Length: 147
Image (cartoon, rainbow, N blue to C red):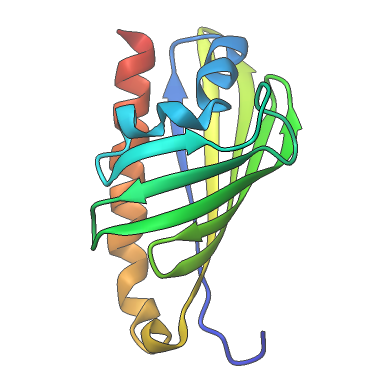
């Protein structure tokens, strides 16, 4: 969208688990509240195991209570998870790239957020805060998987 102030960033974390283990846990979005402090519930609303087209309804408590809709848009076992939907007051596209490394998995999370009209002017100020919060969540994900 022309004139839109997008928020784009990437975080990378190394997890001392195989790519298969990381993918198995991360591709089931119902685990999200276990490692993302801002999410109180993520519930699958389509039947079957996670697959392209699987949809979720998510409840957020921070920065303000809201209900969000998410859909898995890309899956490559042990390599890639792509998600599209709404996060707080943003249209969002998320990707998780997994790369097997010696002793674990390198997880690269790329985030593209499009703020609603009211937030467009302050979006540049929000980038650092949101990236740090996402990085903190990924560190919690790592701690859970390594425990």
